[in-house]
Image (tube, rainbow, N blue to C red; front, side, top):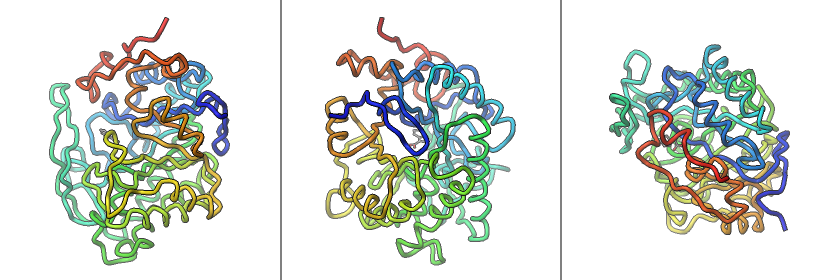
Length: 372
Ligand code: 8OZ
């Protein structure tokens, strides 16, 4: 019987366990630059014997336009690349593996974070009923997102190019690969889902059209660094950031079909409502995740299948028996740097302090205790 503690492979990534540290936004990168404190945080979780078999970084902006939250890191300049090298070196020194999550927030932004104080960009000029995180005197301030402007189709190749450059930069910074953030109501998901995409051109309307932008991003990134170190994260029914779709099953089975030929390292699926109920449903029937994986496999997709959202040990072991390859843990990795040790021993588990999640210093970041 496969356990969480058994090694596996995801594309060209040899992983010492099935335990993945999920991407987690922490707003501790002033100037969009990774720093020594972040390197220490990832290092604490990097040894596969006690921590993660694979770390996915916090979401990282591919461009200034892709920024939507205070003090989140970036990967669009040489300065960003140099800053992240301290993180990849720290993780590799512990024998760990780390991929960077590439992020464009689209409409989930605020004019104060955009180039020239302009409007955020989106598939359509529809304001999200959603909040972003600004920092005021170091304190997280949850603030309504700004009204976006609709992207002109002529702007899209530039954004695709930003993803491609970000992937190249991530490799230059020493990452083992990248994960394209296509989940949680950010730019790619805004194109995918009917609630946020009201376009009448080749990028809107039909499912095929709404998936076109994702397709172009994936093709570009895979051409740049190779499919076997590229992953993707999707969240078929999450309502996060005002995301909605009237036919999620058909939409994401189409996405699975399109992803299959890319030779990806892995597909990462948030089940249900991100950070909330796993049973969350959009549309008339519960989402069928087994059918989604089957659609991917039947189209020839061989990437590792990574599941996420509210997993504990029994649920995770069951997922592996049911055909998942990897399980990503979010909040439990924030609070338990030695999560693998604790899972192996059946606990105990520290719980997360919500007051220190977004922004701040070492408290609630570097000071969660390990066993022993
Ligand atoms: C929580 C706070 C800010 C951003 C996501 C990147 O949901 C995020 C995020 C989560 O994917």
